Length: 164
Image (cartoon, rainbow, N blue to C red):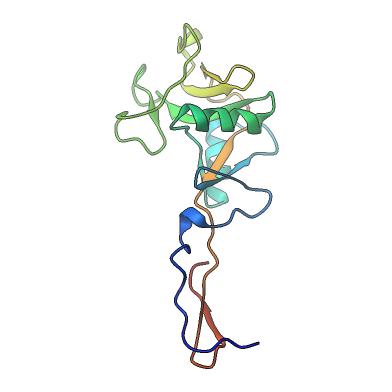
């Protein structure tokens, strides 16, 4: 059946109401995917970039808990480091360390051995620890959802997928 008239994308057609295609999981307006194997911090960031995503850095207790639930008992990277300046933690999406969410375990970060500059979530207690960036752990990638919006011409035929 052809539709008549020209259609505009519905108001609900935006990235916040979009889709997360399997195996991505939707939470809080974003899509998340955990890596299949442990990677170094830099390799995990690159793996996420290769998927058109960024490594996740939680911005709330709820998002932190969600990431820990994806890990199912494994440690996972958090997109936060103090590589630029020891003790000054910066997270993906933050501006010069302003307004970042942190959830350190008691006594952390401690920079044990002078070589712990990347943050991890230990999923059983959902708290963070600083860790060697060249260690290997799982990571969670985060991206905006996809939307599927279509427009039609005056004959009711699809013209273009305007949001993919």
